[in-house]
Length: 202
Image (cartoon, rainbow, N blue to C red; front, top):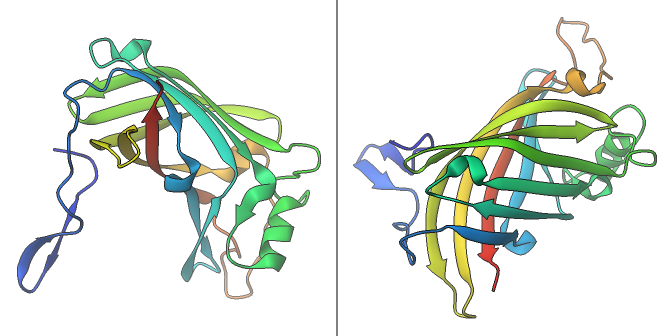
C-alpha cells in the first residue's frame, strides 16, 4: 500500500479524492526533466503554535534518471532559487529571504542531490544531500509513484508525491521569538512537500 492515501472518508463512505491514476507506459525507466508549471516544491510550518503557514518556491529546475530494474542506479538533482519563496505575504517573504532565515543574497540556491534511491513497488525512498545556506545535510524523502500519462502535446509524464519533516536549525536557520504564553513564534520542525510532474526526455 502506498505511503500517501488517495482517498478520504466521509459520512457517505470512502470516496476517491481525485480521479483514478493512469499508467500510459509499463516501464517508466528513462531520463526526465521536472515540469515547473505542474510541480510544487512546498513547505509548511507552525506559527505561534496554533496554525499552519504554507509556502512554496516558484523558481526551480531538476532532472531525474529512473531505473525501475535497478533503483540504486536512479538519481535526482534539483536546484531551487531561494528568492522565489512565496507564502502569500510580501513582508513575511522578505523576512524569509533575509539573514534571519535563508540569507538569499549570499546563498541564492538551495540544492538537493540524491545519494541513494530504493524502491518497494510504487513507493520510492530517495536519500540525498540538501544544501541550504552553505550547509549540507542528508535527508530521506519517501515518494509514491502516482501514475504516468501522455499529455495532449505528446509528452510522456510521470508523477510522484513525497514529504518529509526536517529541523531547520540543522541548516543554521535558528531565528525565533519567544511567546509570553510559552513556546515560540515559528516551529523548528518544517514539513517539506513535493508534488512532482516530470517529462520524459526525447
